[in-house]
Length: 419
Image (tube, rainbow, N blue to C red):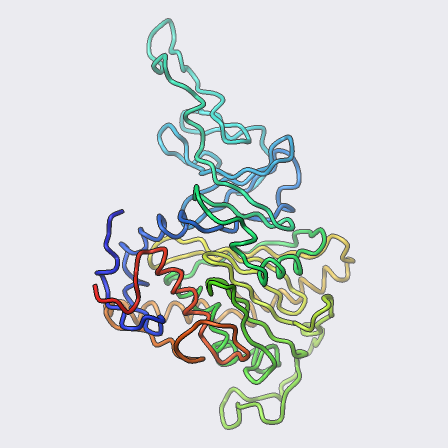
């Protein structure tokens, strides 16, 4: 696309402390994101090796709104390619997951192998010299469009870009280390959830980079001390500011005497759970973190909330709709009792999670309120203006600005510059 996105809206602040609402609502912006962000020089999360352990195993996923097949071939190699037939553009693999010898389009039965190469075209030569494809048609030129794949500790990323920094450089040390921390040994998949949210996908990435909201919006989290804003916590960023990890390191259920909530309706610490095991964190890492939300630009989140471990992938649908796909996991050497504990704790998160149920509604009410106000701006000043750096507090939205600064770079926008 040739859209001059710089000219669409006014960006009054070079440090992205003002975000034009139109960047969330404009379908033209959304279409450009698919090209410049999701298919640009980024590493997109695709899945986990544990989801496709055997030759022929596959999952159908998405990168932005582009349908993708992720599979393992018979030699054990992982491949990813666009799930769109080279013939007429139909979805090739329609199942969510399974094991296949090949991927066959139901429309005209074009057949692709597990490396994405076109291996079969019915009636390619016609019958009795009539019909069929031209003699110079080469199957090898019409495979499924591939993504380049890179894997770190069993976590699979893919990119459409021909030129891009290596995955570990893209993640930078804090986030490569975080993946090694969470995937420090073989894992097992415990289950999946999906959530459709009516709002713009960037409102969700904002939400993930705004630890300030967690101790104000989420009443369950506040009431039972999972992450209150007075607790020990903060945010880590990569050298470009594009990735963020919000963290807390205080035992769940502990409260300080002067917690900053005095006089508000969000300060009740007297309620008790009938089943307190829901919040019993069992220390399993050398550090003291009991909550980490690591958001990797542009589309994924690696979470540890107590002992519930999950990956969330954002799958965009339109300027006003997206899906969150949750993959819950534990470690292969966990006992059956630990599996049950992780699953019990997983009630904290997901579409109806005791902690996270409010997020989807918050995003919806923001999106509805900003429609028609494209040239007004969000204020992003908690934590201060200027450089984007690590934060030693949860009362900040500085990581939001790190996301937007890199987003603007990919989109061809210079914040603070007149159109």
